[in-house]
Length: 318
Image 1 (cartoon, rainbow, N blue to C red):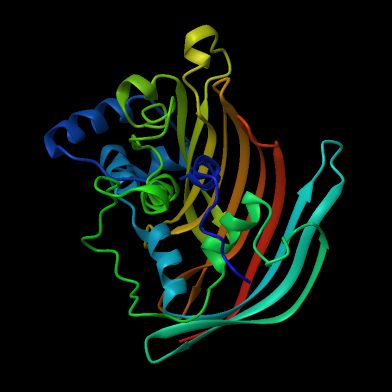
Image 2 (image 1 turned 180 degrees about the vertical axis):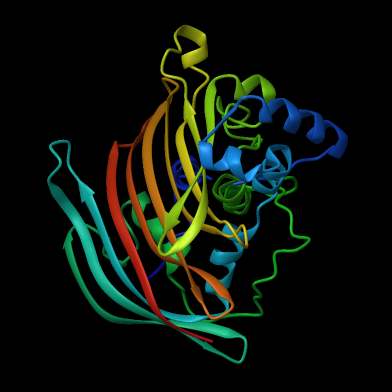
């Protein structure tokens, strides 16, 4: 499977959204105290007397979600891949169902396609992807050729699109969106600072809550962010992240799962995306287990695309 790097830029960026990091520590502390007063706490959270500003700070600076995906660069695993492109009536017009195996050897990784069935015009004559959804999926889960010299280290890594151009710039913006939701992303027309949900001026548009419940046999803090339902006019137009729910392991504060919905219509482009990510532990490694995506977006001069996919990862090896 080849990953065509000539993909359209904005859908690549919008595809994945979600996680956090901030600058001035003193201002952060003030903002955290202000946000803490806006958050609804369940009875169990109140009884446990959780330090809410400190909790917010840990959420903002979480790297466990990013680490889980970085771990895919150093582990072998099998993936069941189900990608479907739908028409306007919701019927499948193209797709692929495949089973792939990533191999790791002496610091390098490669991928074998164990089985594959395709439908419609999923590929062009050169077996490049005809659809952006497939290109995005490949960027997360497929390895093209042999890739060497990678690590799963996240400490000290920062995302910065400055000085980058073309696809490299958009890859960096993609990382910022996927792993730093809630932070302003420069260079994305019309929505760059509207996803900064922890900025006090944006936070006023949302309801925040913290609860505690079991998830996959583990006690978890559930942090929810949802746009207020009574917004109208210009306030409603400022919403990009409609809803985001994250389950944090109560002992380790590792992300166990995250669901989120985002949508926007600028006139030049519009999109509506729903994603669900489930994580699990493989030994000491936190890794993605299931990722579900349902997206509908349209960019000027391009055909509207409706894509659905599920990635199921298992049989991890070191």
